Length: 354
Ligand code: 13P
Ligand code: SF4
Image 1: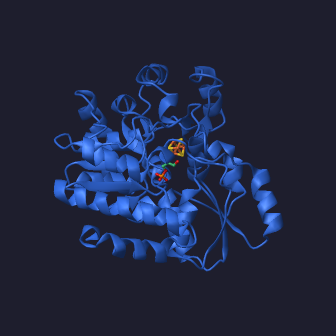
Image 2 (image 1 turned 135 degrees about the vertical axis):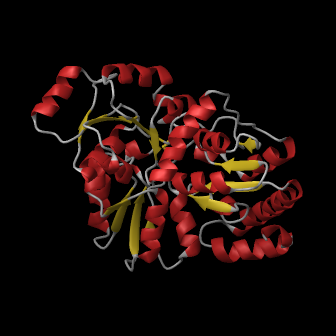
């Protein structure tokens, strides 16, 4: 158990692991705080879940479980800790609460937003349902509980294509990430219709059907403010400078960027790919902290970093905030009924199908 180590031991362990990514003086301060967090965590019987984007010192010192959205949803469904401290963004903490209504779920930041989650409302989903009666609503996990509650099934970047491929429907509504919808459509051989603004008109859906489309995916114009910034030019420039580079793109990136890359998958799939691969140099088109977290475990890997692209929401979560969260029992995440039960159905359906 991490908490059984004394502060010095924790510091030495972190120094060995993170010496190439965090300066020692900063690590000494962080190790003290991390040790205190682990002590409090044990005292309170808490469990800390951390998304792969957490900064390296936090990721490697206080998290009981780390992973992508799908893995953390599974852990949240099975964990026994109380409170659950979610080191990620609000929609992730909400998912943990939806699956554990009797336990306290804490998000260490008062904000923890996400541009995808805030791109769509429950009313938008209801309008789309009216326009496409009978079409199942497939919703990315990066949405708030009210939107999940209007959905038939949730997906994550780790299972979206697999789940869409299994759906027996001519038209599905896939919300809210435009790029993920297009990437999934390409992977599954489905066709995507996107509204210029707001929902798609029936005439355009009819046109797709006339083209002999097997399934039409009706999308939305949500975008991740981080992955939206990567361009094909970035990939080409890096390839020019480092011809041996292996490029991995998250499926929230624009489809042309995904196509210019060598691999696309969820954050955990990207981590696995780098660890398993025998290439030397990698470019990760996703939040920059992940490259540091990989190097800490696989120092022989060389990462080309495009670190001007950061997720401001994930970066809200610091060791200081996690400590304050445990001490002050903040910020409590609540999902009222009947939203919670309705959203739970969509998440459970995903966990069953995936
Ligand atoms: P993953 O499920 O792949 O970890 O993605 C979550 C996310 O928000 C990526 O920006
Ligand atoms: Fe949302 Fe993008 Fe940040 Fe992920 S990286 S939490 S999708 S804003």
